Amino acid sequence: MQPLNYNEISKIYDDVREGDLTLIQHLIEALPSRSDVRVLDIGCGTGNHTDLLQKLTGVQVYGVEPSARMLEKARQKNPEIIFKTGSVDQIPFEDDFFNFVYTTDVVHHVPDIKAMFAEIWRVLQSSDPEMGKPGGKGCIVTQSHQQIEERPIAYYFPGTARVDKERYPDIPELIEAATAQGFAQVKDEILSEKLVELGASYLELVRKKGYSMLHLIPNEEYQAGLKKLEGALEDGPVTVQPSGGTLIWFTKA
Image 1 (cartoon, rainbow, N blue to C red):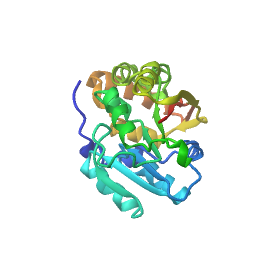
Image 2 (tube, one colour; image 1 turned 120 degrees about the vertical axis):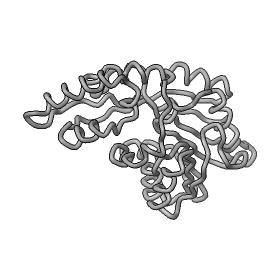
Image 3 (spheres, rainbow, N blue to C red; image 1 turned 180 degrees about the vertical axis):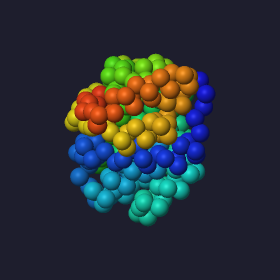
Image 4 (cartoon, rainbow, N blue to C red; image 1 turned 180 degrees about the horizontal axis):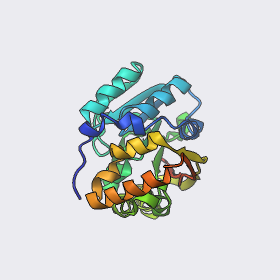
């Protein structure tokens, strides 16, 4: 499978990735009720979720991202956030530094999920019952293989489901890896989404290949799906049900 150039994709990334308020509210509910909370967004991209979480909570938020151009865009959005170059298996912070760590739609880029959970374990705060200090919490936001198959885009481009099921570890594999690392309270939660309309702006994003999986299917398959989508939108927008996401929660005991 060909590698993706996220410095190039960063040029249109914000056209595709908006901050998801419902998701961020779910994450905020899991934060400790303390003023000195430190939160890390791993693979923060152009900082849409990072920015939204910081503005809604006022806590100290950090972002880690390997793409220099995405980090450049992220830094322009919110000077209150500390951004650094790094990745999920090389987090440039000291041990026991964060109270809460999360990733959104990043895990399919991770070559070794065991190494990912080991690094998250390292930077999350350890519990100290004598001091009344709880262990840090984390959340992996991803999609199950079933959700990938149910994406609206997979109706027009079936090959996108095929390539993404090869890239995405399924939910049982993630739960097993988190548990093997020693995390407690490991569980998954389905996050549903409201009906949305696909219209002219969606079609334009598809024409630009604004979704990374469109770069990974054969061109003839892409052209056939584009023609099918253009035909479906000839008479105006269509209403579809998004496939939703899955949140994997865990706590450092």
